[in-house]
Amino acid sequence: MKLETIEQSHYYHIYNRGINGENIFKTEENKRYFLQLFGKYVAQNVEVFGYCLMDNHFHFLIQVNSKPEEFTKSISDFFNAYAKAFNKFAGRTGSLFDKHFKRIKVKDENYIKSLLIYIHNNPKETQDITKYKFSSFHHYLNLSQPEYFKISKDYTVNTLFETIENMAYSHNKEILAGEDLQGAPAEKAGEHLAGNSQIQNNFDLPGDDNKSDFFVDPNSQTKKNMKEQFVAYIKNLQNEITSALESIDGKAKFQEDKWIRKEGGGGRTRVIENGNVFEKGGVNISEVHGKLPESMQAYFGVQDADFFACGLSLVLHPKNPMVPTVHANWRYFEMYDATGNIVDSWFGGGQDLTPYYLFEEDAVHFHKVCKTACDKHNGEFYSRYKKRCDEYFWNSHRDEARGVGGLFFDYLKKTDEMNMKDWYNFVTEVGNSFLDCYLPIVERRKDLSYSEENRTWQEIRRGRYVEFNLVHDKGTLFGLKTNGRIESILMSLPPHVQWKYDHHPEVGSEEEKLVEVLRSPKEWV
Image (cartoon, rainbow, N blue to C red; front, top):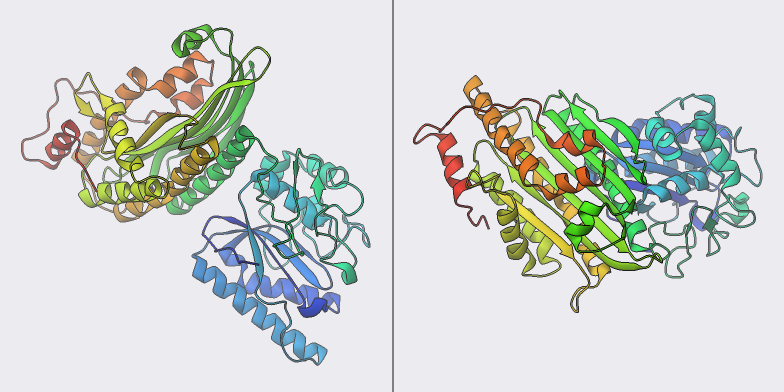
């Protein structure tokens, strides 16, 4: 089985068993020592969401927070330390574990939930899972923590299951009877996952004869339609981005606000404020549907149409004027006829940078990462969507660009060259590139010194940002005309803004240098 590449901020199912199916734990003290060593070597590099130790195998559900090489070394040190101690205890020599430690990247929030249920149900055939001592489930139910590390319960309970009662119910009711994602006695571990696994959550975990029989790949999208795939993608991307931003800020945490749209659908708004790096920002997802309002029917040239729209939209306003504001969104839209058939669908999105002081190497970096993402799908995409970005984010009443651009695309529909799955792959490629586009710039600029004059200039330029969003932006228009949530729609507006009458930067200044570039967009790569 090909091993997954470890990447920071991603979720993984980490698991392994004894070589040739042998036991890796002979006593409860062995299991306690295993957890102690995990806490010593690995826990500082990960967020732990769940675990279970069986006699001849183990499971962890984690998110990697450290650099990949640091995590991999910690795992190696952990396994080596335990194997050495266990071999001495058991009077054995040689390898203890089956080859390399196995890991599967989990990109879907629903599968994270399902994996946790599966992991906690491993002892089901021989134990009461609510009382099994070497699983994280009893810590969830008893509001306790393991002795040697902490479980990240807030995301699991509040986001995945919403309440601890729902979590308990899901573990008891959602797993189908028989061979489906349940634990087996030690001598059968690994045999029951060959291909029958199914979860009552409107998706399956199909078997794959080309993979190890020890686990079924949870990333299969074969049973999902396009909107379900994209909703799952943006939910996971929101988690990845907010986690990375909290880490680089070092102080502020995102506050989450779930909301419901009375006409259909809702969303999950996450806002960060008054941090070390970010003065204000939001990373929001929404999933709305229903009757298309008359004003939007006229816009799209249709009558009596129903619609579905989902997307992730983010804006970050840093405190330091040397750090640029950034905006990004990735979205999917479907329109239906009276019988519910899809009559049209498309993707849209992009990402763009708005500096207050121009560091050309930052603009070059941002555009290089954008180009790399585009080139993986079509060598013409970067120049095409860079040009559209320059055209779209143009403050026509000021005769200048909002920022130094990036990518902008809309109405990406099925063509002879690109089907909808191809467009999905392209749009998610761009979405996955966002953190690589932006975080290195933040790291370079966040600790630079600045003056009150720099701050004043930042607030004046923020005013131009507000003007574009309220006068020209189609996303704001769509949200307002489809009765979207006002707080989420206007999340993009910065907290402190200035409008100075007939203001012009000093000739030859760094401020004027920026304005000159905004008046005449340039090619950065």
